[in-house]
Length: 467
Image (cartoon, rainbow, N blue to C red):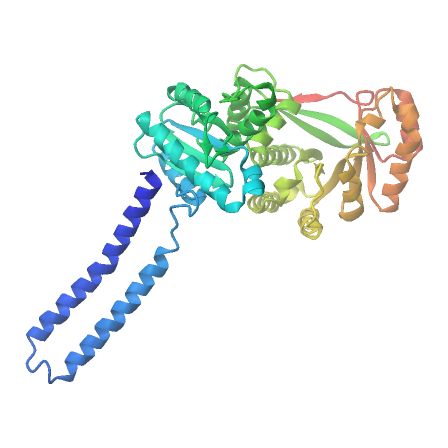
């Protein structure tokens, strides 16, 4: 029997006890009272008590049955844990600070089975695969298998101990799975695993399993199986650097004419050995581990701190738009801005994203609140990302930054007309234009002549490091 079924039985049994015990106590109380009352059958008190007993009993039973259906432990199709209960079960297990291994089993051809043989056959396949896994792990000493039905074709198994203890068991499972046939239908299983050395956050662990599964599918054609993948040393370095807030800050001047208008603030994480981590690489890790919000908030706090230390400093920082759309993070940002009134009009948020956010009214409302608090909004990489053009059209912003592809020395002469077009288009909307990567006097002079508002590059100013 599966652990999910045992838990379901245990829950229903406890529910039955909760139903019966109060009724039993109430019944005894009524009987005792009647026993001590004279003229029981002739007294109207008896009928009142019986009526109350029945009303309370019926209400109580109905109430408990109704509440009982709110808790769903077993999935209807697979008889494994439901996704919600499996997540709760996993969180409870992780809270005990023991090592656990997660095994992710995907029925790779379930969609094909569904289209060829029908929904009932596909449902039956899921049920039988769960039984197969339970029987297999039972032979390996796991009596009541904790398994959950996470989504259509995905099953999750949680076991005590590190994955090294189960590697040979899972490798044998992969071999045995190649022979599975249910109702004369061939079943293809993909199996991946990780453990809590990767993370103790449930969402990170599940996301990592999905990523391993995608790699597994890609490698399928070459007859390889991506069983597991340890988090790299680099990933650990990024996570630890973020926890320590171990960063190096670089500032570079951005000019309007001959004067410094503001500085761009670039941040790099630093590993424990003192080496700098390359931003392009660690941003991928932060996105993968869903730590981008935390990183962006750290950048904002650092920028605010620098601005409070220098009353003349005006900073531009790059942020992920989705961070601003996160309600809890946005609330924190607004609290910080309200707390530090002295930095009003001295922060620029530079935004870019590949996918257009279609709830544009909500996005505009967020940016409007930021601008009302004295934050300028810039859209980055105009000319390289289609979304940047759409945001220039649809959002209330203060400036755009032209993608550095157009201002590179080798490309500049060919694309000067394009840059001029961007400039005219932005100015028509009342938006200022910012160009970076100015590498020589010729580029500087020509961009200044066509009316670019803000210019930045090594020709004008080098980076200033602030630890």
